[in-house]
Length: 597
Ligand SMILES: Cc1cc2nc3c(=O)[nH]c(=O)nc-3n(C[C@H](O)[C@H](O)[C@H](O)COP(=O)(O)OP(=O)(O)OC[C@H]3O[C@@H](n4cnc5c(N)ncnc54)[C@H](O)[C@@H]3O)c2cc1C
Ligand SMILES: *[C@@H]1O[C@H](CO)[C@@H](O)[C@H](O)[C@H]1NC(C)=O
Ligand SMILES: *[C@@H]1O[C@H](CO)[C@@H](O)[C@H](O)[C@H]1NC(C)=O
Ligand SMILES: *[C@@H]1O[C@H](CO)[C@@H](O)[C@H](O)[C@H]1NC(C)=O
Ligand SMILES: *[C@@H]1O[C@H](CO)[C@@H](O)[C@H](O)[C@H]1NC(C)=O
Ligand SMILES: *[C@@H]1O[C@H](CO)[C@@H](O)[C@H](O)[C@H]1NC(C)=O
Ligand SMILES: *[C@@H]1O[C@H](CO)[C@@H](O)[C@H](O)[C@H]1NC(C)=O
Ligand SMILES: *[C@@H]1O[C@H](CO)[C@@H](O)[C@H](O)[C@H]1NC(C)=O
Ligand SMILES: *[C@@H]1O[C@H](CO)[C@@H](O)[C@H](O)[C@H]1NC(C)=O
Ligand SMILES: *[C@@H]1O[C@H](CO)[C@@H](O)[C@H](O)[C@H]1NC(C)=O
Ligand SMILES: *[C@@H]1O[C@H](CO)[C@@H](O)[C@H](O)[C@H]1NC(C)=O
Image 1: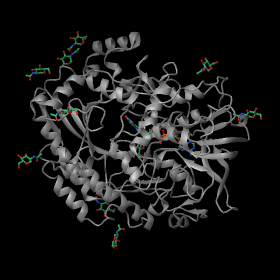
Image 2: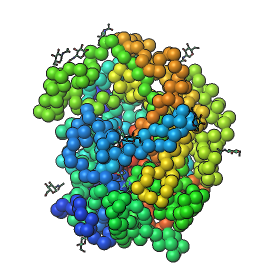
Image 3: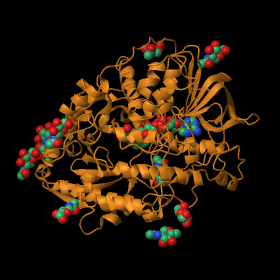
Image 4: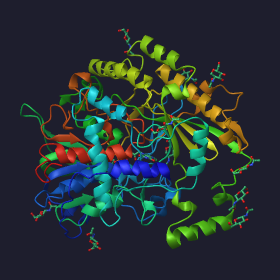
């Protein structure tokens, strides 16, 4: 409990603003496309985590009207969306895009499947509810890549703001909150391992906060938070089950202007259009925002020309710099698991009691997602023996080793800039590159500062065909070296007196299998795709500037996870919310309606 106390104090301390009164009007979720207006001030593509956050802020001004177009459905109150113990249960259902990546030779030609929310609320409805944030160094790296105003100190007010203002709406909000099930066990174990539990910093061992509404012990999401707050405003329309298929461009001026968008309810449905008076805001997530730009003729000219796509704007960064957090399972069986939620599946009486506790007074084991005990460690901690060898290998390798030969020159330049900052970052004691998630009695081990870079590219001009998603995982040999060291360290944890009481035996990979082949055979995404429309200077492969405006277009902004130039070493949702809040409050012309903090 102690860490939570300290952590939440940091998050909620000294709020530097007063909450404005919100106007209240009546219902506006529209299911029938004929009922929408022909134009809106702002059209937001994607009613997910970032899109609904921005929609909520924009519609605080009753003079501004907003349409959100969401490809997925509105949920029907399924329990896998609300109950923490079922978190992730919507993966593989109709609410999941279920994108499958291209086969990677480095992964023994395996394709990795990427779940992505296709529902009002987006991936914040599918996620595992970990709600943490990166270290100072993670966001300072964004700033140091040529993005003034985007360091940790600049973002911190928005991490705080999001939590505070949403939480204040009668429990609709995101609020830091955790269950205590195994916290004391993990805490004592990590202390015995000689690690210091962090207090407010995002490295070390800690019991992570979750996006949980404490009044009901249910998921907090962009659906339960910003959408619920904004949905009754008469200046807000949201249309679900409508996929935006193309941006409508006016290329007659010196800069392209987006007139509106085309959308369809299915591949065979008729095309409809709607006009934007002010701006179009892309919030379709890291895969589909990049694809939509390419479908609209904005992207790497070399890629578009191959598809006979008219190049409206040659913007080589679109779809490049793609990276994700990736993990393996260090699987154990334990003889002594007296505190395990495994009982929920093996003991029907216990499971029924737990369900009753949850329904009656929101207590008991079902209030936890089971994945809150985590560690984020610097290279020097988990790779004691090999950290200097890994650092030397990174500086000795050609700077373009992480990239495809097809990477455009500006993207190569941008990666070189990232790489020189990585060397400093990886050598630091207060910045993490490996994550451990306790999954009783096994460990999930995730590389959270990968160097390899891939791409997202459309393969046809049909918007209902999924783009090629190519992680190029492990293409930089340093990624494999870091994972190998991470696995060794994970094994060593089971030898400490703290974990010995479990009487655990390694099941996978097992000593007969090399860590390297295990990684190649099992490495999977841990669902944090980013970088495909990076906020970077244009000559470093950037797609958006520090106002998140697309280069060369007068009225197009991107607000989702695709703008992260480098993934922070943390689960991504809290950063997505913070970015969306920041652009809503500071960017022109979005400032006028709410003033400045
Ligand atoms: C299974 C899973 C587990 C995760 N676990 C965690 C976790 O525990 N903690 C954490 O912090 N993060 C987690 N994440 C990651 C986090 O949820 C995402 O990084 C974040 O929600 C992304 O927000 P976004 O706004 O970029 O995209 P999304 O929230 O995915 O929103 C994009 C929206 O756009 C819609 N869309 C796409 N294309 C179109 C189109 N052409 N027209 C109209 N609409 C379109 C989509 O349907 C979707 O609703 C997880 C993600 C997943 C999928
Ligand atoms: C998801 O995609 C994979 C790979 O294409 C496929 O095997 C699986 O059936 C799909 N799942 C759903 C729910 O569509
Ligand atoms: C991967 O596929 C390529 C091309 O089909 C093939 O040459 C190669 O041998 C395959 N590699 C493995 C490990 O199967
Ligand atoms: C652990 O961190 C706390 C708080 O930063 C510090 O006071 C303490 O000295 C540290 N302990 C060790 C053993 O490093
Ligand atoms: C929105 O309207 C519904 C139906 O009138 C009402 O029940 C609900 O309380 C309203 N929500 C908010 C946030 O005002
Ligand atoms: C839709 O159009 C009507 C009629 O012009 C207008 O009163 C209303 O405010 C518009 N609603 C939105 C959300 O734009
Ligand atoms: C949970 O399972 C363990 C091991 O099977 C057992 O010892 C323990 O009593 C069980 N607890 C409950 C509450 O069922
Ligand atoms: C199953 O759970 C019940 C209720 O918690 C408990 O009394 C019982 O001992 C458990 N059975 C086993 C085999 O652990
Ligand atoms: C690191 O090196 C020491 C001394 O050579 C050795 O005892 C230890 O097992 C090594 N640790 C790992 C994780 O390889
Ligand atoms: C990296 O740079 C070298 C030397 O400039 C070049 O030969 C090679 O093709 C480049 N590799 C990639 C992947 O771009
Ligand atoms: C089993 O675990 C319990 C609780 O963690 C501990 O008290 C006990 O000593 C362990 N038993 C063995 C044989 O290690």
